[in-house]
Length: 266
Image (cartoon, rainbow, N blue to C red; front, side, top):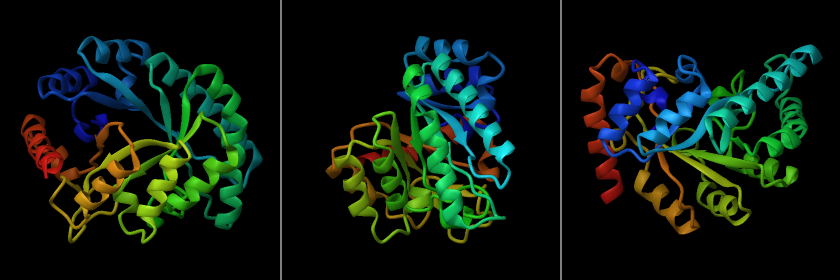
């Protein structure tokens, strides 16, 4: 589970309820760790029998201003420090984009930013995990919009401390997805797998993700590709939803567990 999925809960509430529902691992968003601090947050999760899966989110490298690019590097070093204190094996990167420049320049700045952090990440034993985002976010959130682009970048950097996250919400549309999933695992770069669904119609392109099985993503097909690739990590539920955040979160957890069980058993 990503803590953003049950955003209204404080981390302590989330951890208690996740444990009661048999959740095996937690991906921690920075804001949810702030109350207790990174180290105590990680200790709490492990004390309740769960793994810290990842820390979310670093990135946002591209800027037309060099001063802002330099600040992004310092911000990411701080996130790496926090991930290490949390005990997270990876920092997920929402890579960023700068609308004042073309996408190719933003991609060069993203690769340069990650390369400048590899030694620091290695020292802290925190992998930098590139997450490609849907093309609708290519204006400001990410110039990395396909799994092929993420794979090419990870392979070019060529470090075990750089990996790739596969999120079905961002990649379900890609006609090359199956091939790129196998490529990702073949090169040892497949680090994380995020699941939810795409509602039809979608009322908000950021805050209207669906429970697994509610929308049009061919989840079983993608799950089979992931299994065939040999990936054996967590299938992480990551749902941004104003509708679900307004629910009683215990009711929402019941819905999540039911939809995940159907997804897993199908």
